[in-house]
Length: 256
Figure (tube, rainbow, N blue to C red):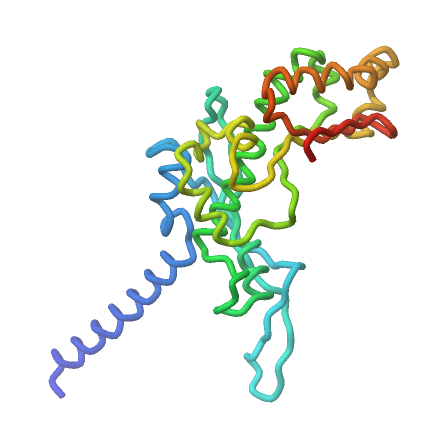
């Protein structure tokens, strides 16, 4: 065979290997594969993947068939991507999205299972968790902050949650299609008013933080339960649904 033909075969083989590598890299790298979805959620040009990491999972395992004489189980793997963006209030944040939940789900459900997430659905779940945290921060600062001073407010974890177990996979398709489902627009009111699922506001005081307050501050926080309920009901009206825990026996809930 002539030298130029051998060279052509080598170049072709190298191009095929490089092509397979690039396709695989695109497929497993969510910031590349789902750039359009991330542009929509964060805003085009308003986010950046600043780092990524591969990790081992303690939540699922895979079969290792590298040894031809026997098979063993080994920890599964997953990827994390740190995304830098700016909130609606202008605060710079870094949030981690991961394919860990998807990989755990895939380890439990077969390819044709109705409970199996697609990668896009799993990404939407990750973005939903981020929007929950952002909406909870808004509730804390703008609503509960009218009742509590900063030191007492810092004892609370405010989030959006839901009843009814994990939503079915197609729920995430519906959520991704909502006009308000972006980092800038998703608020507690959006979730409370939505009929996609049974959402509510979760307010939890961390006991170890409460214990660090001065006695007067602690008593004020524990005595603020009724005012906090009234503030939430004034802000969200008939859509107000919440579950509040300030300490042992100091709890309240509505619509949950």
